[in-house]
Image 1 (cartoon, helix red, strand yellow):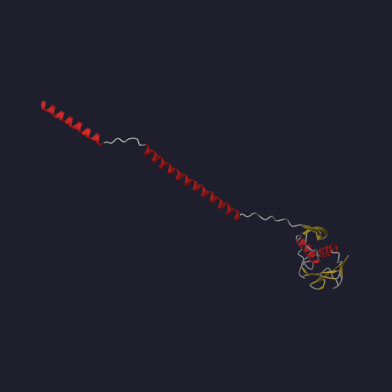
Image 2 (cartoon, one colour; image 1 turned 180 degrees about the vertical axis):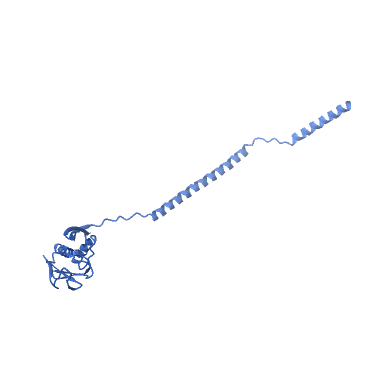
Length: 211
């Protein structure tokens, strides 16, 4: 038993020696305020750089928004204000569905000069709305006379009855007489020749209507 006890004692001594040797190799550091200060400075520098980068991003975003707004202004210019055209009234005559002439007020641009051609065209346009497609060859003047020449293959020469033909001739002549102070007579012709249709026959210089 004694040798066993010595052996155990020897093992215990060796274990203690190994533990003490390990403790000597361990270094316990002391608190160094300078190191903490450096770490704080380094951390602060990183934070400042990050903040600067964030500010740069905001500045860049603001610049991009400004450019986009400028582009939008170019793409969407301020619309030009268009003033409505001022009109004036022109009293003319048309033919209704019962072949009776009746007055109609037409609107024309305020600065338009009222002449024989304008009046005839306005009457013809109005009658076109009533399905009377009048064929005008020419509108000329001679002293106080307005000479209206029709196309021979269009109303009032064709495709209308006698009552409608007379109503069309009356509407055009009355519109001319009522709106023109310098002209008091209306003569009708067919393509430069005397007006002759299936219902009406006029001489070459025969006045159809006189004021």
